[in-house]
Image 1 (tube, rainbow, N blue to C red):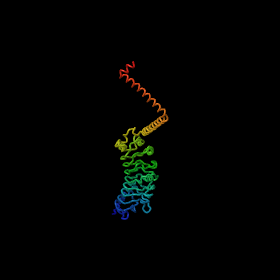
Image 2 (cartoon, one colour):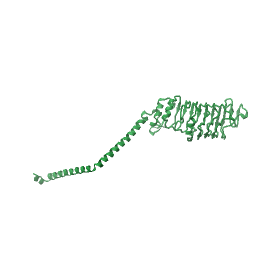
Image 3 (cartoon, rainbow, N blue to C red):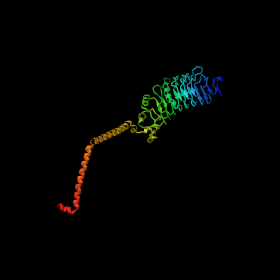
Image 4 (cartoon, rainbow, N blue to C red):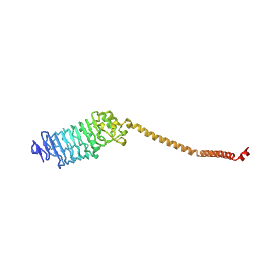
Length: 324
Protein backbone atom coordinates (compact mmCIF):
# COMPACT_ATOMS: atom_id res chain seq x y z
CA UNK A 1 0.00 0.00 0.00
CA UNK A 2 1.30 3.47 -0.83
CA UNK A 3 0.14 6.50 1.08
CA UNK A 4 1.25 10.03 0.31
CA UNK A 5 0.33 13.30 1.89
CA UNK A 6 0.53 16.27 -0.46
CA UNK A 7 2.74 14.40 -2.97
CA UNK A 8 2.50 13.10 -6.46
CA UNK A 9 2.03 9.33 -6.70
CA UNK A 10 5.61 8.53 -7.76
CA UNK A 11 7.26 10.48 -4.91
CA UNK A 12 6.54 7.99 -2.10
CA UNK A 13 8.20 4.55 -2.07
CA UNK A 14 5.96 1.51 -2.21
CA UNK A 15 4.48 0.34 1.13
CA UNK A 16 5.58 3.53 2.86
CA UNK A 17 3.82 6.47 4.46
CA UNK A 18 5.20 9.87 3.48
CA UNK A 19 4.57 13.16 5.27
CA UNK A 20 6.35 16.01 3.54
CA UNK A 21 5.28 18.58 6.13
CA UNK A 22 7.34 16.80 8.81
CA UNK A 23 9.89 15.40 6.36
CA UNK A 24 9.17 11.84 7.54
CA UNK A 25 9.02 8.62 5.51
CA UNK A 26 7.84 5.52 7.41
CA UNK A 27 8.06 2.00 5.98
CA UNK A 28 6.83 -0.73 8.33
CA UNK A 29 6.70 -4.50 7.84
CA UNK A 30 6.82 -6.24 4.49
CA UNK A 31 8.92 -8.81 2.65
CA UNK A 32 11.35 -6.36 1.05
CA UNK A 33 15.00 -7.42 1.43
CA UNK A 34 16.48 -4.08 0.37
CA UNK A 35 16.20 -0.45 1.34
CA UNK A 36 13.32 1.26 -0.50
CA UNK A 37 14.45 3.00 -3.65
CA UNK A 38 13.70 6.58 -4.70
CA UNK A 39 13.61 8.03 -1.21
CA UNK A 40 12.39 11.64 -1.56
CA UNK A 41 15.16 14.23 -1.39
CA UNK A 42 13.21 16.22 1.19
CA UNK A 43 13.31 13.33 3.69
CA UNK A 44 14.77 14.33 7.05
CA UNK A 45 13.58 11.24 8.97
CA UNK A 46 13.41 7.72 7.54
CA UNK A 47 11.91 4.92 9.62
CA UNK A 48 12.24 1.32 8.43
CA UNK A 49 10.91 -1.37 10.76
CA UNK A 50 9.89 -5.00 10.48
CA UNK A 51 11.52 -5.54 7.08
CA UNK A 52 13.85 -8.38 6.03
CA UNK A 53 16.98 -6.40 5.17
CA UNK A 54 19.78 -8.84 5.97
CA UNK A 55 22.66 -6.75 4.55
CA UNK A 56 23.28 -3.03 4.23
CA UNK A 57 25.52 -2.65 1.20
CA UNK A 58 27.73 0.28 0.23
CA UNK A 59 25.69 3.44 -0.30
CA UNK A 60 22.43 1.65 0.53
CA UNK A 61 20.62 4.97 1.01
CA UNK A 62 21.94 6.86 -2.00
CA UNK A 63 19.34 7.39 -4.72
CA UNK A 64 20.95 7.45 -8.17
CA UNK A 65 24.19 8.66 -6.60
CA UNK A 66 22.47 11.60 -4.92
CA UNK A 67 23.22 12.50 -1.31
CA UNK A 68 20.25 12.90 1.02
CA UNK A 69 19.89 15.60 3.66
CA UNK A 70 18.46 13.08 6.11
CA UNK A 71 19.17 13.74 9.82
CA UNK A 72 17.44 10.73 11.47
CA UNK A 73 17.56 7.11 10.32
CA UNK A 74 15.77 4.39 12.29
CA UNK A 75 16.50 0.80 11.24
CA UNK A 76 15.40 -1.13 14.34
CA UNK A 77 13.96 -4.64 14.10
CA UNK A 78 14.82 -5.37 10.47
CA UNK A 79 16.82 -8.60 10.84
CA UNK A 80 20.02 -6.86 9.70
CA UNK A 81 22.97 -9.26 9.90
CA UNK A 82 25.78 -7.41 8.09
CA UNK A 83 27.04 -3.84 7.70
CA UNK A 84 29.33 -3.58 4.70
CA UNK A 85 31.91 -0.82 4.13
CA UNK A 86 30.44 2.64 3.59
CA UNK A 87 26.90 1.36 4.16
CA UNK A 88 25.76 4.86 5.09
CA UNK A 89 27.57 6.73 2.36
CA UNK A 90 25.54 9.64 1.04
CA UNK A 91 24.17 10.71 4.43
CA UNK A 92 26.65 13.46 5.39
CA UNK A 93 24.16 15.27 7.66
CA UNK A 94 22.86 12.26 9.58
CA UNK A 95 22.60 13.02 13.32
CA UNK A 96 20.76 9.96 14.69
CA UNK A 97 21.22 6.32 13.64
CA UNK A 98 19.22 3.56 15.33
CA UNK A 99 20.25 -0.04 14.58
CA UNK A 100 18.72 -1.60 17.70
CA UNK A 101 17.09 -5.05 17.80
CA UNK A 102 18.90 -6.56 14.83
CA UNK A 103 21.22 -9.61 14.59
CA UNK A 104 24.57 -8.19 13.53
CA UNK A 105 27.12 -10.92 12.82
CA UNK A 106 29.42 -8.84 10.63
CA UNK A 107 30.40 -5.18 10.97
CA UNK A 108 33.00 -3.80 8.58
CA UNK A 109 35.70 -1.62 10.11
CA UNK A 110 34.55 1.04 7.61
CA UNK A 111 30.82 0.54 8.16
CA UNK A 112 30.37 3.99 9.75
CA UNK A 113 32.65 5.93 7.45
CA UNK A 114 31.04 8.98 5.90
CA UNK A 115 29.04 10.05 8.98
CA UNK A 116 30.93 13.14 10.21
CA UNK A 117 27.83 14.73 11.78
CA UNK A 118 26.50 11.68 13.62
CA UNK A 119 25.58 12.56 17.21
CA UNK A 120 23.70 9.49 18.48
CA UNK A 121 24.24 5.80 17.64
CA UNK A 122 21.91 3.14 19.04
CA UNK A 123 22.98 -0.51 18.88
CA UNK A 124 20.90 -1.97 21.71
CA UNK A 125 20.22 -5.72 21.57
CA UNK A 126 21.90 -6.06 18.18
CA UNK A 127 25.48 -7.31 18.52
CA UNK A 128 26.04 -11.07 18.30
CA UNK A 129 29.27 -12.55 19.79
CA UNK A 130 30.90 -12.93 16.38
CA UNK A 131 30.71 -9.18 15.80
CA UNK A 132 31.96 -7.97 19.20
CA UNK A 133 35.59 -7.46 18.18
CA UNK A 134 34.52 -6.05 14.81
CA UNK A 135 32.41 -3.48 16.63
CA UNK A 136 35.49 -2.15 18.44
CA UNK A 137 37.30 -1.61 15.14
CA UNK A 138 34.24 -0.04 13.49
CA UNK A 139 33.81 2.48 16.33
CA UNK A 140 37.48 3.43 16.31
CA UNK A 141 37.15 5.88 13.41
CA UNK A 142 37.46 9.63 13.06
CA UNK A 143 34.24 9.56 11.05
CA UNK A 144 32.49 9.34 14.45
CA UNK A 145 34.48 12.20 15.96
CA UNK A 146 31.27 14.13 16.78
CA UNK A 147 29.48 11.20 18.38
CA UNK A 148 27.84 12.30 21.65
CA UNK A 149 25.72 9.30 22.63
CA UNK A 150 26.44 5.59 22.18
CA UNK A 151 24.00 2.95 23.42
CA UNK A 152 25.06 -0.71 23.58
CA UNK A 153 22.60 -2.20 26.05
CA UNK A 154 21.73 -5.90 26.07
CA UNK A 155 24.58 -7.20 23.89
CA UNK A 156 26.34 -9.61 26.32
CA UNK A 157 29.49 -7.50 26.06
CA UNK A 158 32.24 -8.49 28.49
CA UNK A 159 34.19 -5.25 28.22
CA UNK A 160 33.91 -1.70 26.95
CA UNK A 161 34.26 -2.01 23.14
CA UNK A 162 36.01 1.34 22.70
CA UNK A 163 39.73 1.20 22.02
CA UNK A 164 40.03 4.91 22.83
CA UNK A 165 37.77 7.57 24.29
CA UNK A 166 39.48 10.61 22.80
CA UNK A 167 38.48 9.66 19.23
CA UNK A 168 34.88 10.70 19.92
CA UNK A 169 33.15 13.56 21.65
CA UNK A 170 31.17 11.17 23.84
CA UNK A 171 28.92 12.50 26.58
CA UNK A 172 26.83 9.36 27.22
CA UNK A 173 27.81 5.69 27.03
CA UNK A 174 25.06 3.17 27.84
CA UNK A 175 26.28 -0.35 28.70
CA UNK A 176 23.44 -1.63 30.88
CA UNK A 177 22.36 -5.29 30.84
CA UNK A 178 25.58 -6.76 29.43
CA UNK A 179 28.03 -9.37 30.78
CA UNK A 180 30.66 -7.01 32.18
CA UNK A 181 32.28 -8.48 35.30
CA UNK A 182 35.00 -5.88 35.73
CA UNK A 183 36.42 -2.77 34.09
CA UNK A 184 40.19 -2.70 33.79
CA UNK A 185 42.57 -0.02 34.94
CA UNK A 186 43.27 1.09 31.35
CA UNK A 187 39.64 1.99 30.72
CA UNK A 188 39.38 3.65 34.12
CA UNK A 189 42.39 5.84 33.36
CA UNK A 190 40.80 6.96 30.09
CA UNK A 191 37.51 7.70 31.86
CA UNK A 192 39.31 9.88 34.40
CA UNK A 193 40.76 11.85 31.49
CA UNK A 194 37.34 12.31 29.82
CA UNK A 195 35.42 13.96 32.66
CA UNK A 196 32.38 14.80 30.51
CA UNK A 197 31.48 11.16 29.83
CA UNK A 198 28.61 9.58 31.77
CA UNK A 199 28.61 5.77 31.79
CA UNK A 200 25.53 3.67 32.62
CA UNK A 201 26.35 0.16 33.89
CA UNK A 202 23.29 -1.21 35.69
CA UNK A 203 22.37 -4.93 35.34
CA UNK A 204 25.92 -6.20 34.80
CA UNK A 205 27.19 -9.24 36.79
CA UNK A 206 30.15 -7.66 38.59
CA UNK A 207 32.73 -9.99 40.13
CA UNK A 208 33.54 -8.27 43.42
CA UNK A 209 37.09 -9.30 44.18
CA UNK A 210 40.37 -7.44 44.27
CA UNK A 211 40.45 -7.21 40.46
CA UNK A 212 37.66 -4.65 40.75
CA UNK A 213 39.89 -2.29 42.75
CA UNK A 214 40.41 0.45 40.11
CA UNK A 215 36.71 0.41 39.18
CA UNK A 216 35.67 0.51 42.85
CA UNK A 217 37.72 3.63 43.60
CA UNK A 218 36.50 5.26 40.38
CA UNK A 219 32.90 4.78 41.54
CA UNK A 220 33.75 6.19 44.97
CA UNK A 221 35.69 9.22 43.72
CA UNK A 222 33.91 10.11 40.49
CA UNK A 223 30.43 11.24 39.47
CA UNK A 224 30.72 9.78 35.97
CA UNK A 225 28.43 6.79 36.67
CA UNK A 226 24.89 8.10 37.38
CA UNK A 227 23.54 4.64 38.22
CA UNK A 228 26.43 3.71 40.53
CA UNK A 229 24.05 3.05 43.43
CA UNK A 230 22.31 0.29 41.46
CA UNK A 231 25.44 -1.70 40.59
CA UNK A 232 25.40 -5.04 42.44
CA UNK A 233 27.91 -7.82 43.00
CA UNK A 234 27.12 -11.14 41.33
CA UNK A 235 30.17 -13.06 42.58
CA UNK A 236 31.43 -14.38 44.90
CA UNK A 237 28.35 -15.98 46.44
CA UNK A 238 28.97 -14.33 49.82
CA UNK A 239 28.72 -10.86 48.25
CA UNK A 240 25.90 -11.50 45.78
CA UNK A 241 23.42 -8.63 45.83
CA UNK A 242 25.76 -6.30 47.73
CA UNK A 243 26.04 -2.83 46.12
CA UNK A 244 29.53 -2.33 44.69
CA UNK A 245 29.70 1.07 46.38
CA UNK A 246 29.09 -0.57 49.78
CA UNK A 247 32.10 -2.86 49.62
CA UNK A 248 34.83 -2.34 52.21
CA UNK A 249 38.27 -1.17 51.23
CA UNK A 250 39.78 -4.39 52.59
CA UNK A 251 37.71 -6.29 50.01
CA UNK A 252 39.82 -4.55 47.37
CA UNK A 253 43.19 -5.27 49.02
CA UNK A 254 44.82 -7.08 46.11
CA UNK A 255 48.35 -6.48 47.37
CA UNK A 256 47.71 -7.94 50.82
CA UNK A 257 46.08 -11.07 49.40
CA UNK A 258 48.97 -11.58 47.02
CA UNK A 259 51.54 -11.12 49.78
CA UNK A 260 49.70 -13.53 52.05
CA UNK A 261 49.67 -16.17 49.32
CA UNK A 262 53.39 -15.62 48.64
CA UNK A 263 54.14 -15.84 52.38
CA UNK A 264 52.45 -19.22 52.69
CA UNK A 265 54.34 -20.54 49.69
CA UNK A 266 57.65 -19.24 51.06
CA UNK A 267 56.96 -20.78 54.49
CA UNK A 268 56.20 -24.12 52.89
CA UNK A 269 59.48 -24.03 50.93
CA UNK A 270 61.49 -23.16 54.08
CA UNK A 271 59.91 -25.99 56.10
CA UNK A 272 60.58 -28.43 53.27
CA UNK A 273 64.25 -27.40 53.15
CA UNK A 274 64.59 -27.79 56.91
CA UNK A 275 63.09 -31.26 56.66
CA UNK A 276 65.51 -32.25 53.89
CA UNK A 277 68.51 -30.95 55.87
CA UNK A 278 67.38 -32.83 58.98
CA UNK A 279 67.05 -36.09 57.06
CA UNK A 280 70.48 -35.61 55.48
CA UNK A 281 72.06 -35.06 58.93
CA UNK A 282 70.43 -38.23 60.21
CA UNK A 283 71.64 -40.18 57.19
CA UNK A 284 75.24 -38.94 57.40
CA UNK A 285 75.47 -39.68 61.13
CA UNK A 286 73.58 -42.94 61.09
CA UNK A 287 76.49 -44.99 62.57
CA UNK A 288 77.14 -42.56 65.39
CA UNK A 289 73.43 -42.32 66.11
CA UNK A 290 73.21 -46.13 66.15
CA UNK A 291 76.16 -46.33 68.57
CA UNK A 292 74.61 -43.64 70.77
CA UNK A 293 71.29 -45.50 70.84
CA UNK A 294 73.10 -48.75 71.75
CA UNK A 295 74.91 -47.00 74.62
CA UNK A 296 71.63 -45.64 75.92
CA UNK A 297 70.09 -49.12 75.67
CA UNK A 298 73.03 -50.70 77.60
CA UNK A 299 72.91 -47.99 80.26
CA UNK A 300 69.19 -48.53 80.69
CA UNK A 301 69.72 -52.30 80.92
CA UNK A 302 72.40 -51.93 83.65
CA UNK A 303 70.21 -49.57 85.61
CA UNK A 304 67.29 -51.98 85.40
CA UNK A 305 69.49 -54.86 86.67
CA UNK A 306 70.47 -52.76 89.71
CA UNK A 307 66.81 -51.98 90.43
CA UNK A 308 65.93 -55.62 90.00
CA UNK A 309 68.70 -56.80 92.45
CA UNK A 310 67.62 -54.31 95.09
CA UNK A 311 64.01 -55.37 94.70
CA UNK A 312 64.97 -59.03 95.33
CA UNK A 313 66.89 -58.07 98.47
CA UNK A 314 63.99 -56.10 99.86
CA UNK A 315 61.50 -58.88 99.21
CA UNK A 316 63.62 -61.83 100.74
CA UNK A 317 64.57 -61.44 104.47
CA UNK A 318 67.25 -64.11 104.17
CA UNK A 319 69.10 -62.18 101.52
CA UNK A 320 68.75 -59.12 103.69
CA UNK A 321 70.45 -60.94 106.70
CA UNK A 322 73.21 -62.18 104.43
CA UNK A 323 73.79 -58.69 103.29
CA UNK A 324 74.11 -57.59 106.97
